[in-house]
Image (cartoon, rainbow, N blue to C red; front, side, top):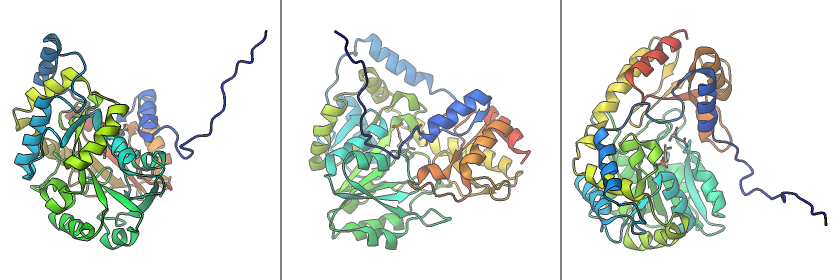
Length: 387
Ligand code: PMP
Ligand code: GLN
């Protein structure tokens, strides 16, 4: 008997989504032999001591499923860090969960808290996973622009976007892609605005240790009125130069963590055991994350000095490892066309800011990542000097 061999068609859940711009630009950079300042990741290695700590855990036989919420030593280390830096005591048992990176953490939070028809406020430009996550959860993303030009929060617009259906807002400081950092006054304003509401906060703090010029990271954990309604998300990938390890955490009050864990257990269940033990041991010394602002500020300054010799207009970079530039004086191309041209013809890859807007808004700004070895930055600057 003949059988009909065919793949059934399906109706996409994410019609607006293709391959992410990070993947597209990294592939183009590799194909063209360009210096890749596009996708955000370091081109230098992590501390060998961190690799040794993970290797030791593997050699000690710590290779089976860990507890669903993460190994106690790592949750204790995260709680101690949050307490010493931001002054809030999270209970390591009921309020901290280890995740397979921040991307998983954010999707799991959104699935756990949004019901179909709920609204969630997203400040644009934003990291590209947020809006598709909301769509997958059956919610509605309510897009509120950050202030044009400065990328600072526009509290009047945020307040106007809150309705009876608003379940959560996601914030991100230090901010990818703009490099802005929310101030103490911004956080007080948010705390005050949300106080009479039931709106939850998802605070994407993956760049928490990259804040420059003596400023402080304003974690929601510092503000009791915010912390009580917030999921704090961070990623060891950014902090320890291991973006490929995909490991991070969520800190949230026990009631919120309990709901988070219900979804987490059927999403990833557990996270890589030896890495959890290795990172826990490595965290005993705070120096690696405490020295990160100076480490990246030097790279930022080196990169900015070089860019001053081009016709790009430099935007501020207060935090993260990103530097945005206005391309108007250099080219008439759209941001995306410019990034492709820059990669192909000049040999340096960048990311268009339009990739961080649901409607592809083009403001003639592109993002460079300066988490690179000095020789990589110098090589890029030599090429960019032609502009
Ligand atoms: N949020 C932001 C703002 C990011 O830039 C990144 C890094 N790609 C993530 C979340 C995801 O982090 P992770 O690699 O730990 O999933
Ligand atoms: N966070 C990094 C960036 O913004 C990497 C993103 C990714 O590859 N998904 O470039």
